[in-house]
Length: 140
Image 1 (cartoon, one colour):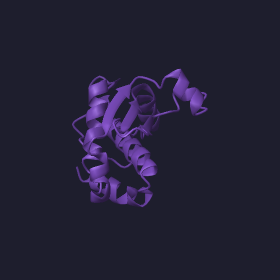
Image 2 (tube, rainbow, N blue to C red; image 1 turned 90 degrees about the horizontal axis):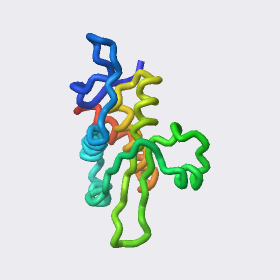
Image 3 (cartoon, rainbow, N blue to C red; image 1 turned 90 degrees about the vertical axis):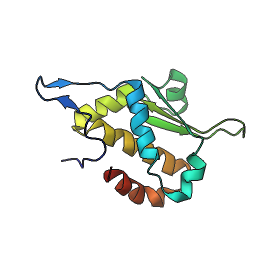
């Protein structure tokens, strides 16, 4: 059984009708923002100006560049722009996130939080802080 953490007011299933509720783009963005707010002090300054955007799917050119054959396999991407004037950006892909959540029976907040943590910690060389970060999110 998957661990459950985060704002559990968001139901994965509406129990009365057994209907799956698909979160909006804004809800996915808010879940990610909540997860980012729990980041360790070491990377808070780095993430201060990070943009969070949510799209239904990754664009074809991104899938091609990353050699991803199935558009449902890419859940998110953290981009660090080379130009100082451009901000860092976390892009989350709603449909693949929702499909993963539904097939794994894991609450969508958990999936979004984990993807947020993994993408950012991997690209900021803070992999060692993942457990600490996820533990803090679990206390929400």
